[in-house]
Length: 351
Image: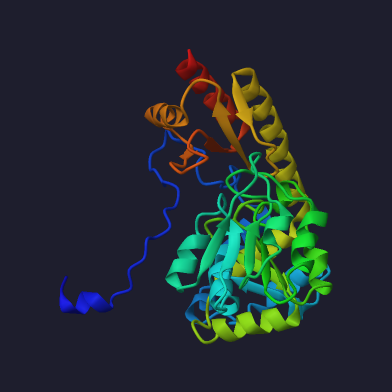
């Protein structure tokens, strides 16, 4: 190792889902929406005046914050926006998890959590999910420097009831509890209204999944004025101009087109349940997913083999070579046509 390399921070990075290129690919591996954004979103971006790109964006993204606050009936002082929920979650780790005690999160969850913890040198402890991949609130009733978990969870898709989420929050008044609701629009019970009850509680969401704006990178969070101010202080100490002009305009339009949003979510949920029914008929066992993906394993054929053979057919799903879940595949819900093609490919593989 060269001398200068001794002072370079060494981390094991997060590995995102593969982004294959080509026209004959069915991409069901990164939980993106299979549908285009609302026409209102497309028009809002297309109608941008060139002069808008010459200037810096509003550092507070005030118009978007106002739109989000109005839609969810929350005070503007309790809303924070960022470059996707990843940006907000990473900033939250940096802002709120500064104790000598370890933070807590499930052993099977969004695999960025341990990456951020290592990046910011935060002690952490992973809490095993139950045998049925569920969170046991009692496991989080101990000394900690913070708690974070996704609900519904990823990659399992299972949602914790609201009463049990509140049980965790109420048992930890001395640390910040973060609930990642990236998939809440597809099922489960939101705990958004609890931000008025618990000052130490943050809810994080995204426009990437249910509002079909993964390419725009827009995330948002709800919390007490204390938490939101702390996030803003860290943001303005790092990068004032986060969301660009197009992202702000597109996200505003997505919020306004509620009819399209509701219809899109409903279509994905219907396709999810139909696909789940067909997979069960083929010998798959699926979790009770409340997301825009399915988490499944076959009774005889190894998950890795299914993953690889689907890839040979230009169908991309997600496989996690990790303890406890290495026999499962995660399948993003696509269009009906894409899911039918998946089922036909699986029938061919299994036969």
